[in-house]
Image 1 (spheres, protein in one colour):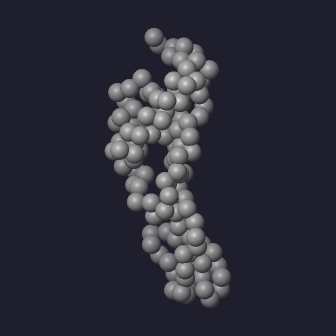
Image 2 (cartoon, rainbow, N blue to C red):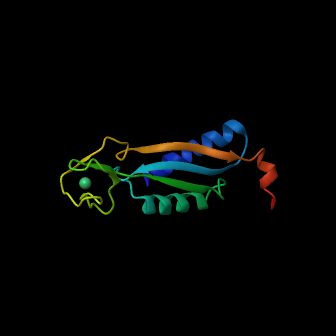
Image 3 (cartoon, rainbow, N blue to C red):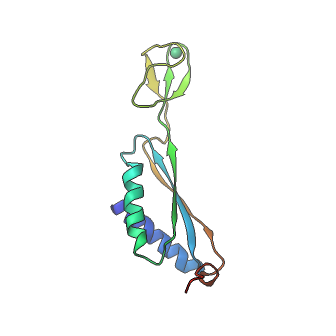
Length: 122
Ligand SMILES: [Zn+2]
């Protein structure tokens, strides 16, 4: 919940700075970051609903965890914790340094020119 809350704070700041309505925000979630994208989305949507930030889309990009095979040097994305080499079947694989452990803010974008333009119904 706290991640979603701090994301909304950033959006509010961005929105105020440009005096505009932010339509979408994006994050990158590493496979090994411990952040569950589904529950993050759930919290985010629940928080947004009661604010004037709605409608606000959350775009999630996943950063895969990659391993490299020590036998055939194949570099592959690990899915469902299956670390065997998909190329030769060897279990002798090692993790490739990556940002799979990180949670990154991609920023807010698609800022409408002014709140009035898309606030239509008011
Ligand atoms: Zn292999």
